[in-house]
Structure formats: C-alpha cells, structure tokens
Image (cartoon, rainbow, N blue to C red; front, side):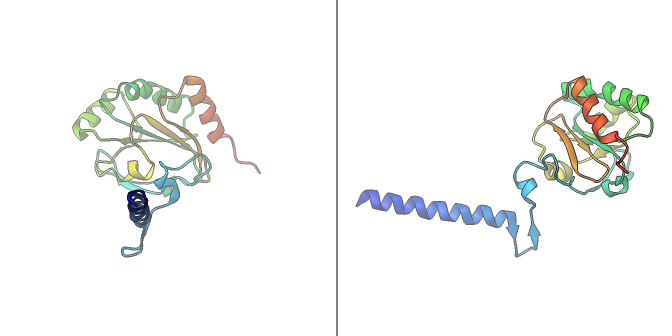
Length: 184
C-alpha cells in the first residue's frame, strides 16, 4: 500500500513538473514561444542565427539583420576572461588579413561596461562591441560561459560554434567556410 502511494506521488510530481516546464517554453498567456534551439542550449550548426538588435558599448545600435548576405563572426567574451583576452589578437589579425570579407561582432558577457570598453580599446579592437548587460543576446544564443564564437553564413545560418577558444587551424577553417564566395 505504501509503495502504491509513493508511486502515485512520483507520478503527480512528474506531471506537474512536465506541465511547468512545457508552459515555461510556450506561454500562451503572453504569446511567448521560446524556440527549441534556445531551450536546448542555443542554436546548433545549421540553425538560423537568432536575430537581435542591441547597442554597442559606445551607444550605437546594431541589428544582426543588417549583415544578412555577409559572413559574420559573433564572439561572446568578457574582459575578465583569460581565453577571451588571448582571442582578441587573432580576431584583429583576421580582420586585417581579410579586409571587408566578413563582419566581426563582439558581445560583452556579464562584465562591467567600463572594464569592457577599456579592454577593447587597449586591444585596438575595431569591431563593434555589443553591450549585453540585459543578457538577452547571450540567452538567445545559449551562452553560459565564455568565450564562445559563432561563425554565421551569408544566409544567416550557423556554420560553426566553438564553446571555447578555437585552435588557430579551426578558426581559419571556419572563417574560410563562411567567406567562400556564394555558389552561382
């Protein structure tokens, strides 16, 4: 008898949990539907890159849709992150070596804006640094740790996602993949 009650309690708790989780992903009372890619840790290779409009650390507005048709390297970083600090020269060098062939965007993750600005300046970062203090873009991309870098094709889909600092050869290969001329 006690075992039957325990099983019933487990079933009821399971159903309540399932309903709560399902409701948090599809909240018809607010019209919010969270895409499956976001629920599962962000977009995967082949998925569309989540759209965003955000301001830079210096107050300009950036909309990912404005770069449609161009290859984009989207890097999530923070000034306190040592691997992120090591990546900056690679990004700077790639932009110099391949002028105008791709767009570089940096998303500052859980950082102090003044520290991020100072670090970007000290590294001579010329690409837009996005202020994600509301954590909206990071959440849409499933970011829980940095660095993470997305290589986005001209059609807006994810070509590669690196969950840590990419090795130089992997970075070069991913960049080559997204900057290849489109097929005629």
